[in-house]
Amino acid sequence: MRRLRGSAGIRNLMRECRVGADDLVMPLFIKPGLTEPEPIASMPGISRYSPEQALAECRTLFAWGIRAVALFPSSITAGKDAQGTGALDDQGLIPNTVRRLKAEVPELLIIGDVALDPYTDHGHDGVLNAEGTGVDNDATVAILERMAVLLAEAGCDWVAPSDMMDGRVGAIRRTLDQAGFDSTVILAYAAKFNSGYYGPFREAVGSDRPSGEGYLDKSGYQLSPANAREALRDALLDEAEGADILMVKPAGPYLDILARLRSATATPLAAYQVSGEYSQIQAASRCGWLEYERIRDESVLAIKRAGADLILTYFAKEIAQGLQEKTAIG
Ligand code: PBG
Image 1 (cartoon, helix red, strand yellow):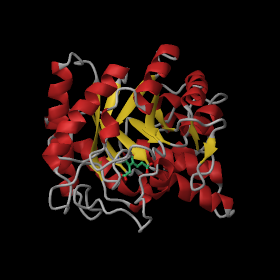
Image 2 (spheres, rainbow, N blue to C red; image 1 turned 30 degrees about the vertical axis):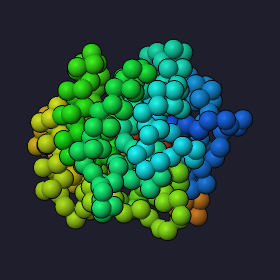
Image 3 (cartoon, protein in one colour; image 1 turned 45 degrees about the vertical axis):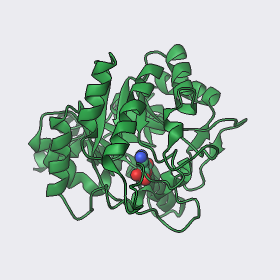
């Protein structure tokens, strides 16, 4: 084997995968009324941006080769209710930001998150059933369909249901088509696990339980970390319902799911390297225990190698910046 590893030239010829800026999607947290970007304590290097600041950020990202951003509303405190009514406000923070970004950086793809958690006072991704024992799947889907159309109307190129309700991809596809948005792409959070790695994100968007009673339990709709076969079934249902791209989330701890899904379907795959994956790499490097850039790049390359065509990662901006002098990492 060493014959093929003997020099940088040979190693480059033998390289099986690369990651470029155009493989990466940068998630952005939007918050109204900020005079300065607001750093997120548990995610060093990541801040919340006002719509105005997000615009400047998007210009930079695009100039560095990033072709898509995923927007999340952050710390909406006013107007949260049990129904997540704010999600259907045409003049809400996200629709207004999307209109702005599409007008000024039209070539940058905007991915709108379809789920109710930033808008519900209980923090769940859907509305609760009458007994209060869990989410009401079908009532939630009916709201998500309208939310998807509203995001498409505002200018989102892709909508990304991250809620894990059953049947929502098919319902969203039909409703988008009926509303004339037949070219809006559905990026389905197809295999989304009930993971502890979302902790810093929930702080970032303010969807952790308002009373602060620990980590909100989404095990009634998100996948069990123990279940791979169930994850494949769930993802392939989204595919059958018309998802254009299937996403696995988190990414690093679930590379087996990504690889198995890669062999099960020819549909494009995305992976979301989530907040906790980002934060643990940041934390260990801050302690001096891991070499930051090396681990960062290795973590993203591994996700690509396992089968992801595109990767949502909080490292996207920084990697793209570093790639101004190189063509790809790996
Ligand atoms: C919820 C949502 C979550 C993330 C994206 N959309 C968290 C959750 O399910 O509680 C997590 C992303 C991250 O951790 O970076 N709709």
